[in-house]
Amino acid sequence: MTRTASTPQRTVLITGASGGIGAACARACARDGWAVAVHYRSQAQAAFDLVAQLKAGGATAEAFAAEVTDEAAVAALFTAVDRALPPLGGLVNNAGVVDVGARVDEMSAERVRRMFDINVVAPFICSRHALRRLSSRHGGAGGAIVNVGSAASRLGSPGQYVDYAASKGAIDTFTLGLAREVAAEGVRVNAVRPGIIDTSIHASGGQPDRVQRLGPTVPMGRAGHAGEVAEAVAWLLGPGAAYTTGALLDVSGGR
Ligand code: NAP
Image (cartoon, rainbow, N blue to C red):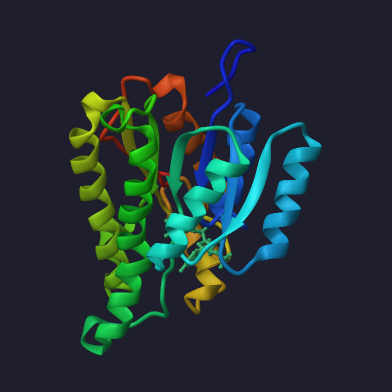
């Protein structure tokens, strides 16, 4: 948001910010003057270390734990952020998972439900809580939501994880619909769609070598860095994107 001395500080809540793209977003947002709510699930130490680094750099930041598929835990998360930090001004729906490679004819309903619970239902619920604080319909001062989708929504990820790709397709449509729903209420809603980014998510999907293997096949000849996605997220949150809503911004090296 690139705060000036006369602009009151506001908070951006970033889900899944203990590592990878979320942590990079936290750094970029802190640099831009946001107070940062660093959400994590299991990596408490990484989240606390990140908050300590941000504070050492002069930023306002706190860490908050929550399981994003637990509706009560998400409500408690937003309440805790309200109490600890300046008023909410932004939300980055970043927490997400892949699963091990599988064809659709091998996928259990349980696997697909978990994927959609974390990657789709949770962003809906987090956005609901954010909108009740941001939207002028609820007395809010406006703000911005950025969803972290994926280039997989365009590519479909056949033979790997069509369930993941479909969950990110839902995020594209969620972004388009919500952006138009709240456009006149002071809230902008956009998405970034990263391509192959060097984070630990690939190892969690059983492909620790995915970045090395597929990076050279990207038109730009390499995988991306978390910080390169974070720059797009920070721009979409900030005043430079004041007339941008409903955009799906590919950050994928041309893939
Ligand atoms: P990552 O390092 O594995 O980060 C994922 C984050 O999501 C972690 O901080 C994790 O928290 C959190 N999370 C997962 N399940 C959760 C749950 N049930 N409740 C709460 N938090 C949960 O991976 P990343 O690559 O940075 O991914 C961030 C986003 O980018 C995801 O939405 C992903 O789909 C998207 N993306 C990544 C790539 C890529 O190539 N890396 C490409 C396209 C899109 P804990 O670790 O604390 O448990």
